[in-house]
Each structure stands twice: as C-alpha cells, then as structure tokens.
Length: 351
Image (tube, rainbow, N blue to C red; front, side, top):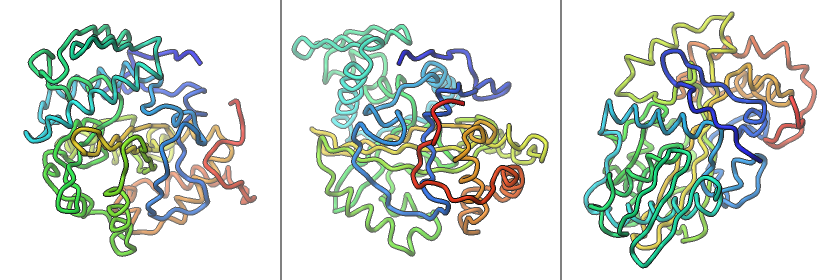
C-alpha cells in the first residue's frame, strides 16, 4: 500500500497529529482479552500478526517525516537524549547496518543502500539525505553512526551490552519515552532499569525475561507490546520535561476526555547484533486518541473493560489516576457486555 505521509503534523503546542482511517485500523491495539496483567509476552518478531505494523523489521508509517522532525527538534533542545558509552562503538555500526539494510529491503521506494567494499552510499528520499561514507570510520558521517541512523527512524532505541550474565543499558536514542530518562538509566543493569515497575518483580516477570534475552540469537529477533496513556498526542514525555507535559493531566474534563487522552502503545523489538553481541532494543511508540479507538467496535468495548478492572497498582504506576474514571465513563455507554472474540485485531475492515 502506498503511504501518504503527513510531514507537517506536530506533537506539541497546537498538536495537529491525527491518524487516518487506515492508521487507526493498523494501530497495534494491545489487549487481546478483557483483562490486563503484566506478563513476559515475548514472541518471535516475524512478518505476521494482527496488524500490518508487524510486517517489517522496522515499521514506517504516515507519521515518519513528522516524527523525524520532532526528534531533531528535541535533540536541538537537549543533545543528551542520545548517549552511547565509549565501548559500544561496534554496536553503533551494527545498528546502522541493521536499520539501513532493513529499510532498503522493506521500503525500496524510499530508501536505498549500495556497498562498494567499505564505501557505502545511503539514500533517504523521504528526508532528502544522500551520504557516501566509509563503514567503520565515524569521521566520514555527519553524526556518530548510532545517532546518524536513529535520527532517521521512528521510535526510541537502546543498546544493551551483555556481560556477567546480565544486560546493561549502555547507550540510547530516547526522545519519545513514556516518563523515563536515558540520562538516569544509562549504565544500569536489567533489574535496576526495571526497578520502578510494580507487581512484575514479585511474579517473576523480569527474571524470566532476562533469562530469555540472554539466549537471544542473531537473526531471530523478538517483540512484545507495552502500553500506557498520554494526554495530548505528545511523544516527548520525559522526566526532564515534566514541567511542560505534567500539567496536561489537569486539563482533562468529561467534555474533552475522548480527544485529550491517547492510548500510547510501544512495539518493543529486540535484535541480537552480529559483531558486538549487544542487543538493540527498539521502542516504537504509537498514539491513538480514545475517540479514534472508539470508532472500532471491538476496541471501544475491550478498552472499557480493561480500564474498569485494572489493578490499582498499575493505575498508579501508569499515571492514570486523574483521568481513568473519565475514560471509563465515556466508554461505558458503548459496552453492552456481550462477549468479544479473543485477539487484538479489529473485527472490521473499514470505519
């Protein structure tokens, strides 16, 4: 399908971000059942699934150009959102190669990569970029290799170094995060990084996840979904910018709740990198307002049931306390209580 890009939409101030009908129907809705609880929920990252977002290694959609511009804006204000520890240079080049090869293979109308020995030529026609560089020589690129390529990709990325039977967050490009800080987390071990998450530690989710990821194999990437909710279609909800976005929660009313509150879904992908043995962790963020989701019959009923029965610990951790009941009250009239088919996919093909 031809992608119609929306290059001028914004994720701050006037918030012109909207999803087309096609984007709503391909949204990676995360609830396959009427109740939610943390789980490992890791599966192979293969080109099948309940949404087209799973069809390629890295999804490119109608928001690509606008999201890359938003990333450049955030980096101009705070260059520290991209940070990689010095021993991760090999992993930087691994990442550049993986994303370039994936984009060129999956979207040849927009990206191309040609190689002549160690001399590579990269074209990104969507952003008007063409660069010839020497693979392995960072001085031949306008930015370090990890920053160079992740400026041209949607979503956040971290680099996990594996040592001492553990994973350490030793690098990242993080400008679209849901209230966590790369500056604070860089260098942390797997359990330290996930320390604030309630319930999951007690039920052993992170112990099982770490054991699984330590055995992750090259060319066998995996994925999972995570979710929270955000006020306004704001990608950058970093702790550093809390004074900017935190007060948004006070602006939600019963009259505007469907337009203001957005379901924020992260498609998290993990790739074992070939030379460094590090793991690239992609965190692709998708936003859809409650009124966009309510256009899908199955989703408006299921979202109502999930939020209504959410454990209080998760409501607090996900920061939903001020507006969760308003969303439930908005969705309740749509829910007749009839059984819903299991699975995340919409049960309709048009809106």
